[in-house]
Image 1: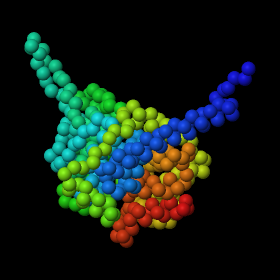
Image 2: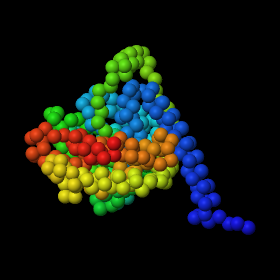
Image 3: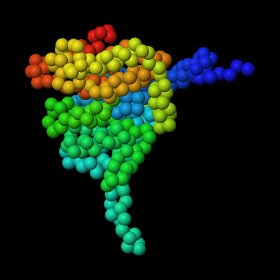
Image 4: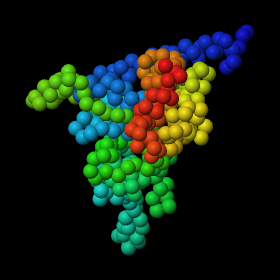
Length: 340
């Protein structure tokens, strides 16, 4: 009697068939999620896709754009469609870390015994919307550092685990606007993608104008829940990545560092480049994008499409580059040229 082992061709074929079936099923659920989101969010397909990629990758996203472009509405809709426990925090200059994390209060029992009790803050949820995150002071912004990286917070020497899954979707106004504080580099690096939110096209804006000014608006319905989203994130990590794609990701990220880059423009214009988190983020995002498209493996097209959102907040231009009018978008485009 023949017994399969994990390395046998038969077992490998069975595993490949299982993976293909699960990817097809997940692709159908993602399509349903997109349709539900489209009932409320008009146009902005690329923005929706990048946000879903972030959540399927298990990461956090930073949505950057001027006020009034529907960033808040998108996050609220995602909370509904993904079936997650959602909280919203409006970041303001007077917001304190305890307003996000929670705090300990001294209580006295009927017997006169005193003890501290921890009251959880809004960060204890599955989907935290940090609205206009750069309007709070750097001290308050940094309150999310540990939560975003470790999925737990430390208050008064005690660790408190956050719910699973846990994601932060933060919105940010352009730094040129009044009353904003730039996010520290360490916190920017914890966002899987930085998503630029631009103005909708004319047809989408026309539909938005007509639908949202009537008596009734369409609503989205839940497609996922917390458990199914975690299962989807686990599936994304099982997607195989070819050697060519893996080498392309590694080469692209390392080429963005002026210390190791062979590209003259990078050495001349970049003050500091992307760290190892960039290659990890690009690998996960490419896997998630392939799954969303129903493909069994990512390609170099995924790298080209996601290089900007992954790298633009993980690089900085030097003074000479800024004086010459060089932009991060131009630098990223130079990096992906060999893949096009």
